Every structure is written in C-alpha cells, then in structure tokens.
Image 1 (spheres, rainbow over the protein chains, first blue to last red):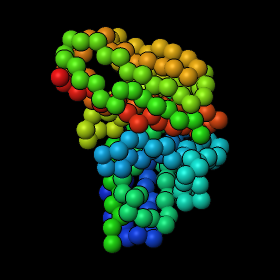
Image 2 (tube, rainbow over the protein chains, first blue to last red; image 1 turned 90 degrees about the vertical axis):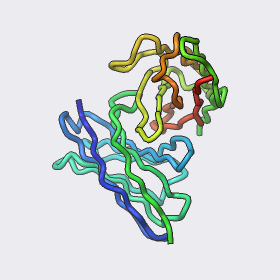
Image 3 (cartoon, rainbow over the protein chains, first blue to last red; image 1 turned 90 degrees about the horizontal axis):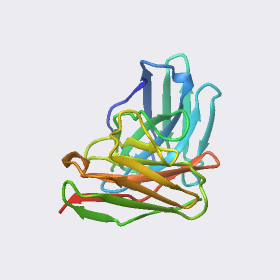
Length: 117
Length: 107
C-alpha cells in the first residue's frame, strides 16, 4: 500500500508562491492519480486539481485555473503542487491524496501553508 | 460544476443510535460518489466509494446507498470513535467536488 509523505509547513508573504511536495513510498506510484485538496481553518474540503504521473497530464478546478500547477517526477515518485499569487485566503492545510478509481486513499499527512505579511 | 449539498449540517446522537446522512447532487453523478470521515487534526479517511462499496478495513456498520442525485451514508450503531465530520465527494468529467460536511456529535 502506497504511503504519501508531504513536505513541512510554510509561511509565505502575500503575492509570493509556495511549492508543496508529496512523496510516495511502499507501492507503485504510477498506478495512482494524485490529487491536491485543501482545507482552510474550520472549513470543508476543496479539490484543487490532479495529475496522472505516468502520463504527466494534469487538470484543475476552475477556481484555481491559472494559479496552480501540479507536476510529478516519476523518477523520485514525488508529486508537487505550486500555488502562486498567494493571498491570506489561501491559508490552509494542503493535502495530497492518491486514487486508482473513485475514492481518495491514501492521503498525505497535510501541509500547513500560512500566508501572512 | 456539480454542487453537493449535505444534510443535516449537524446530527446530535447517542452511542448505539443509528445515523443517517444525506448527500444530494445538483445533477446526476451516476454512482461516482464517495464518503469520508474526518476527525480533528487528521486527514480524511475513505469510507465508501462508488456509492456503496466499503473501503478496505471499514467496519460493516458503515453502509452507503443511492445513485443519480440522492445518496445516503448510514452508520447502523454509533461507536464512540464515529463522532466526527463526514463529507461526500463526486467525480464528474475528471473533476471532483466535496459536500460541505455533516458533523456527527454526541448528544
């Protein structure tokens, strides 16, 4: 079973960018689609986009189109999510999650991104 | 974009009681619906996928039903560890959305 381990917490200034990593171990990375989901403090879950690592194809939620880039490095079994033009409303825990069909499992542990001047 | 509406927002029940959570889609999602449980400070956990299939290791007291636009998650007899927030999720045209969540709290 694949396990996903994310990079550590980040503090960023408004207008800057953040790049969060998600490394897979213990399974076949290429079998999974990797999605990114965020959760603002006290709020619900919000899907941002996903990538098929074996193909390098990504698609994004309309809300984040043009501001988020999801990539994957098959050689290191790592997926990345970069969010640009950060604003205070982007303060959230960012999760990566793997899926083969319907349903996200496993999930990374989450990465807190704080946007503050 | 397909919108998922969960009800109720909060469900106050006692251990041993039956919990029935609803998720309604703004248009048909066929059976492309999943349910998750989330506890404070933890990542969500997949409970049900394809509307009615239990994920690996999920106890039999959790069951899902429905298709099209109306879906239900049932917890047959609440255990103390079941008090949490539950989200439904749909997939359409390779994009996913989540409902706003139902909190199951101890009465």
